[in-house]
Image (tube, rainbow, N blue to C red; front, top):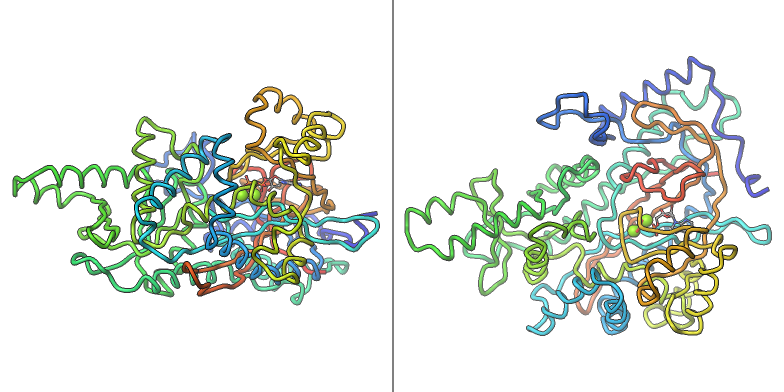
Length: 530
Ligand code: ADP
Ligand code: MG
Ligand code: MG
């Protein structure tokens, strides 16, 4: 019954039309960078020493039907969400209370938070501006008694990815419409007015450009040129998504962008320490030709000389697509990696995001905002009500009355069927679902429970679509997750920029619990508004 709001989907094509659609899609993706690096299994047989090979990204062959009203609701509320999270960071004390509590049960959160306290105790951050490239994720909730509504899955404040690939997927589907692939079938609901534009790439890049320009000219005596630094994970398969933002910055905004992994920065920092310990002029000359990372005194300007460049740059903005997961800090140099994160936070560069902004994206904060009256601390009554209407029920797992009720629900295999258990992590693959919750909770011990939240499962309607993954076609039932991007640049007192920045539609097989595209569970899609 829930499915009845959707038209029959996808449009029927005969075998030849379908084969043509597949080959057109593969070529369009490769021609436009709607691509990923191939998975290791595909690369085993191939020689690929210079990373020259790429594969089309996993995409749907058709845009998925999505109710127009719910899509517009999600876009419209994004500015309020941006304001909410900027204010949570600006006002600090509410957030700090939650994070201090969480730190007792979660070492990773505690390590992040200690960077903030270290900086606060030495006069606070030198950079007053913070940049947020956010993404609020929703699923469609269908109930027999009320019209379909969007319910929030989570709010991302760090490494909100897929803006680049999602813009391209909208363009791909519009191209396939224009070239007639969706109109062979007379029953197709896809029309040009059902395919909204998706400016995520341009809008997110514009956000980074705002930060870069707000930073202003170089403050250090040398170098004089500023640049944005993308801090990335090694062997990133989703690199073309990041490149889309990078190329928009260089090609549209003429801003220099450098990419570096934490290991690259550590090597550069080690060299700076060698420079500081040397007085031999010829040795110094040699060392100055090597990569370098330093904080210039007294401005705290972050200076980076990449290994491939002859000169150094003053970094205006650090964009984190790394250092948000414990695995990013797992190495023999873990302590040094935490020092690196501290050094960046202490620098004068604008962070996207700052440590506090990163922590504001914790699932625990999302749960705390569900309690009556909490949203009103930051928003007008009217806006608070609009935001609240997108919430699904989330419980703490602590010793409060609500927490004890949640423990009962989570430990009972029958009631646990309706819930997902989430730790304070990002990037997919961390949650525990349904029947696995009771055993998992028992295995970790009660003292760890308050580090998790228990969330009601949203059960979105299943529709049919076709997924193209590694050249193979998968037909069947899928569910969608809509993400809306938001850009905010704020100082301690004022929100300077705030806009909605396009969307992401991610689609996964009905049988899969997680929908991460990078993790290999889902694919990128676009909406066909109905
Ligand atoms: P992460 O930060 O790791 O992406 P999420 O909260 O987004 O964590 O959870 C990962 C995935 O799990 C989501 O993309 C979605 O597919 C599924 N999921 C999470 N919460 C819910 C929920 N309340 N109802 C249904 N599915 C959910
Ligand atoms: Mg997330
Ligand atoms: Mg998510």
